[in-house]
Amino acid sequence: MTDALPEDLHISIIAGGVGTRLWPRSRKSTPKQLLNLIPGGSLIQQTYKRIAPLTSPSRVFVICLADQVDAVCDQLPEIPGENVVGEPQGRNTAMAIGLAAARIGSVDENAAMISIGSDHFIGDDDAYRRTLLAAADAARSGDHLVTIGIEPTEAHTGLGYIHRGEKFRAYRGIDVFHVEEFREKPDRESAERYVASGEYFWNSNYFAWRVESINKAFRRHAPGLYDSLARIRFAMGTESVGKVIAEEYRKVDPMPIDTAIIEKADNVLTVPGAFPWADIGGWSAAYTVAQPDGENFRTGRLDGKVIFHDSRGCLVDGRDRLVAVVGLEDVVIVETEDALLVCSRKKSELVGELVKNLAGEGLEDLL
Image (cartoon, rainbow, N blue to C red; front, side, top):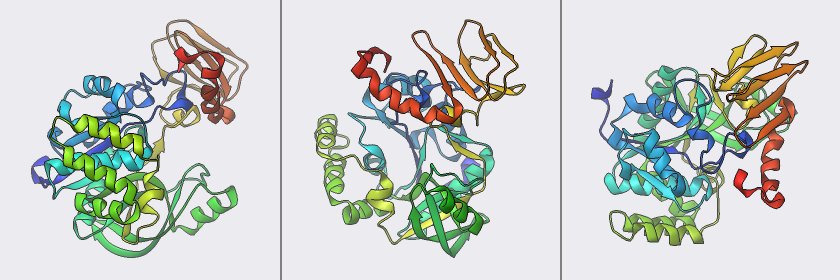
């Protein structure tokens, strides 16, 4: 498969999140993408294995926080160290993806670029790879910004939606569509209407474009970010690049790529991704990848001892000690060396709010 792939294809893995809703497993030093929630490696290792057949390691780039560079390099030794680029601080996805485009453009200014997340569950690797290649083909065909939309399986209110328009063309047997509009996280009634219509996809935040096209989009729709990224592009390959990145990151406001670029642009296409997909953003989503244990679930170390008695729908992420769960339903229990979390599955999104309060309680060492 690799022999037939074009040499202009580069892939960026955006791995800058901290994952506070997966606390206490996910910390600043060990964010969720570096965690082994299931057998087979960490989320970022599984992401790399999934895309490795598409291009050579020298054309894979990772954008992460600067203090996570060493850990990423340790987990992904196949990727050249200079391809792991550290951000001085998180500035959301627009700057992270722009930095990836700057780095890739310094290697090949005519590159086609795919941008993916580092912490997602994918249930069909072959369909996933075929969809990415179709998106890259569509991006090469002109001045297009290509998104990958996930065919929804439920009326999810925590995700953005893409409203597809008329068919543009087909690539690799997959129909590609123009985009009518984007809808941010809807209420339940709207989400149900979107799903029933068959015209909407979940927004996965996977993208494909030519480096030239995304640079033009920054210049048109986010000129402030474009100016900072232009200075970074100019510094690539010089000894001052680290200093320039730090200076420009201090200037810019955090912005997601959707609101900075994608929702403003009129040259957006979408490719439907017909594969099981989930964003492992919190403990409720972790059920997607968890190992069933009767009527309950396990993540993390599966060799630890857990006893479920008269319980159902519970998830345990444990360590060495016995965890006994008696008479509970839909409860999440997470044990680390220095913290224990017990929460309702239905309320697990509140873990992120809890983490925000830890510093005020004098518990910075637990962040």
